[in-house]
Structures are given as C-alpha cells and as structure tokens.
Length: 468
Image 1 (spheres, rainbow, N blue to C red):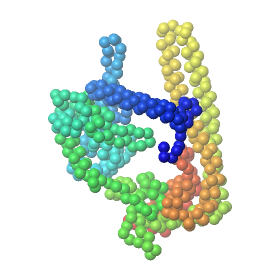
Image 2: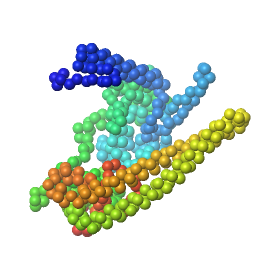
Image 3: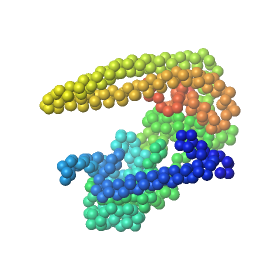
Image 4: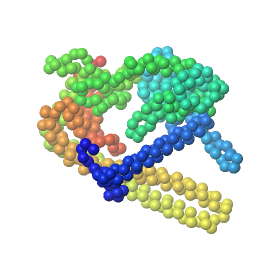
C-alpha cells in the first residue's frame, strides 16, 4: 500500500510482496467472508424455524415469568423438551404497576422514585434502575397479541411468523433476534426490521394499545431523557459512598464560587436524589472541603514515615492471616477432592460386575459424588483466586508505599485528571456518615474478595462542612 508494508506468514506461506501471495490472500479472505455469511444465514434460518413454535429459547427470564419445560414424544419414540414462560403472580403485578405508574406520570424518574419509595426490587433483590425500568417497558414479551399489536408489528416491518388469526387477545409476543449481545458491552436493541416475531405460548399482560402508547411516550421523552450531571472539578466521584445506604455519592454543581473563583459543588447520595429523600436522608457534604481535606490527610501520611510503616504492617498482618486460612482450607479441600474422585473411579469400575438392580444404586451414588466433586472444584477455583490476590497484594505493598511517599510532590504539579488517577491508585473507597469521612487505603485494580480491613481509616473531623 501507500506505506509499503508487506505481510509474510511463515506457516501459511502468505507473502503479500509477490503477486501470487496477494492473490492467495484475497482468495482466502473471500472464502472466510463466505463462511461467516453462511454461518449467519444458517443461524437466522434456525431462528426462523424456532420462532414458529413461539417457545422460550433460554437465557435470563424477563421479570414476571419463569421458564417451564414441556415434554413430548416424537414419532420415532424419543422424548423432546421445549420451554415456555410461566407467569409468576407477584412479579406480574409488579410489571403491571410499572406500566401503570409510567402511563400516569410519563416519567422514568417518577416511576423510579415510586419503586424506591415502595421498596420494590428486581428478581435478584436489587433496586431498579432507570435502565432496568426502560427495559421492562420496551419488552414486547408483555404485550398481549391482539389486533393493535398485529397492526403495530406489521407497520414496523418486523419478520412476523404468525397469522392474524393467532393474535387471539390472550397470549403474549415472543421477539427473537431483538438484542445485539457483545462480550464486555451492554446489550443493544436491534432495529425492529431485524426482529423475528411470533405469538408465544405464555399469557400476555399489557394490552396492545397500552404497550404501543408507552413506546410513543418513551420516544417523546428521548430528547429530555435523564443524563447524569458530570462535574469537571470533583475528585471523589466513583470513590465516595453513602454511610447510610451504601450507594455512591455524586457531585452536584452549584452556580456559586469560592473566594478563589472555584465552582462550589456538593456530594449527594444517588439514592437520596432518586427517591427525593424518602429512602435515604444522608446529609450532603461540601465537595470542595472534602476533596481538599482528603488530599491534605494523604499528604500528611506521606510525610509521616512511622505512621505509614505501622499502617502497612497492620494491613499486611490481616492479609497474611487471611492467606494462611486460605492455604489451610485449600490443602484440606484438595485432599477431599482427590478422595471424591477416587471413590467415583472405584464405583465406575464396580459397574462392570454389578447386577442391573445394584447398578441403578451405583449410578445414583456416582451422580451424587459427581455433584459433590463439581462443588469442590468451584470452591477450589475460588480459593486459588483469593490466594493469588493475597500474593499480589503482598507484592504491591512496596508500590503502594512508594506512591504514598511521593504523593505530596506529585499532587502539587498534577492536573485534575492526574489527581483523580493518583487517588484511585491509593484510595479504595471513602465513606461519608454525615459528619466524618473515612478513607480506606491500599486499593488495587478490580475488587478483591478479602476480609474487610478496618485500618487504615482516617476520620476527617466534625468540622467537615455539608449542606442540607
């Protein structure tokens, strides 16, 4: 090309510096593209066939439903299993409430506030987010297959695998190929033209007219949808947590300035903001004061070598004790796992001489031991990961000590973004209880599943300012 770069592969004998090599590369790429497109076409054809059944194809079930298997015997005498969605009454009522509140208020924020005030939680026992609420409101699985639903789907050019007569006003809608799922990224909703839609075997719960109305309301709200305010001055966003409910505290800019001309900002608990103070009543704290005090406390620590050494030694002692406990449990569990595998091996060998009656009981024992072995393997993997994390922490203590000791010199000349990075290297979290802030040091990348470390922790004093 323009940059005169050639690709030479020793193993595959590709050489783009020669005409024949370039030709072979082009031919290989054409066949690779053909294979990708053929696989995609087969997958889509398979989804077309599966969509005709209206069954549930697996994955996390939507709020309001559970997966239920159905068995049938084929013409060749084999048992086939298929799955459908079965309503969960209490969750169904929650879904109806979400639709009702949104249609009444026309606001995701007010729907979120309602769910917080009434202590409504998700399938996993967590608080609803606006993202989760929107996911429920836009999921066609809840829409009753009626005349309005049929017209809406036809108008939006979905790939519809159902006759008009199947829209009986009772069953719900099943939409396949609706989401684009990529590892490490949030799921995206595909354009409706790419959906493959059928009438499901589960009962619908939201009338077609109501579901379509909700989609129109959401479209109107897109231009004024919730956007989290961003502060260009706060240092502790993502580190500061509320001492009452445990949620993050986010910076809220004001229109006022300090005597030095800095914008004044406060940290407010996210749950308090979302619930308008009905779920959490934590006092806001003065962000300018808190940021400055935390910088100053770490600066003092970097100058106090004796205190820093003592705190590092205390933390090392806690981690060493944890590591010794992990090592002991790991050795014992490895021994038990070896015994379990040995018992399975002996039982398998005994099957060759066992009678039909006794073989049944032997198989039951093997199945039970196999489940026990899988549980042991999971715990072994968990303990090995914890042991490795403890080892890594020991190795990183010298780095942490060096970072804290050089903090005073580095922070003075650092930009705002560099200060944030410095804090995230040193600080694990900060907790605000309404009067004092507590700084937990010795952070690492990711979350380490280690016992809580009470030290080092610094109360910043009752003179920390806050606003109501």
